[in-house]
Image (tube, helix red, strand yellow):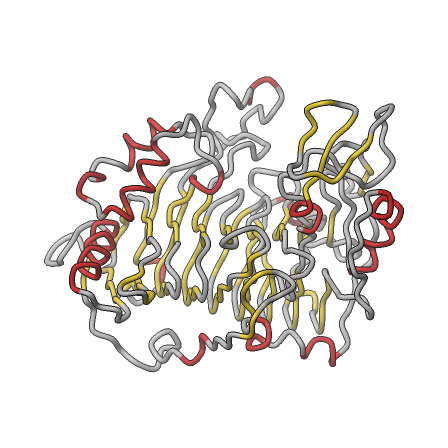
Length: 471
């Protein structure tokens, strides 16, 4: 693992202004210019009030369930033919439920929804559920599907699809699922209450995978992903004064199809977790946010795991943010990572020196390692390189100051915080700070596969910083 910590020049950093980052959408490498300024929305910026179309509360409101209010809004929009933004006010309280906000098109036009808490702080209005990647579809239906037959078809379809699964995938294991283009959320909390303690027939937790449990009843390794919020194929999504809480995979965003750029913006938000807790492949901009690493459960944490396509201009960008920690013994050791580039769905890596006799990775339609020692990698997986830039921010002493970025599946840290390179494995990828690193590592392999990717000149920064200081 390299100990490099690339720094942008002032001119290079200027290219990461939020308006520049958020203006591109469409297919990677062929994006269109579609200017979007989330700060122009006076309500989201706190400069205007709105009249709620629906209210949610324990008493004296239209609904006592957020999901039921969303479902009714979707149904009413479809029958009433409105294409105006729909505002749903949520009174203070803890709402024990999952919420799905579907894509909504009426008369050929997108209808966007806004959820906002009416309390004095985000902590007063909480959407909370205990859901994780180890849950079965049947358990999901029992826990969250009691009213599914009364939901609008667009909502019910997703619940029923989850219920049909033998086991939830990461993207299904979320408290809030946003598929609605133009969605907004303000002044509330999304909390996945899963405590990293669920066992199932696949985890083998007590057999060395994650056990033994700590004093809080948590397994020491994050086998089960538990997403607070999933931004799924939705463009122009804005969260303001929203708190996202979980452990592994807290905030997940993904594009409409592989190689397609969608955008989300986070202002004055709080995100906490431990393993890859801000991750995905679309463009996301964080401004004036607190990003807290939790060391209560694990000895090492990763803030971000971007899998941005190499042709997409921007991945995850932080500006004027505070990277903090929970004061745990693990955090105080000062060895945590800013992140690692997610080698999404890789099965056979073309990187590194293999320890398997006859090993070879070839380009194919899918990524497989079903016929060892030969494996395949798709172009989509190969190009999901991961990009992240951090600007004008305060980074706590919990982050390793000399080596803040890790390889993917490339090693571990010992008790002294020193990085020990791991044995090569089929999912390995070294950290890549710029496009030059990609071509340096894979030049011969790319030629052997007859793959002519254009090398940027000058090199594009993939992991970089500007004007940050240690908090």
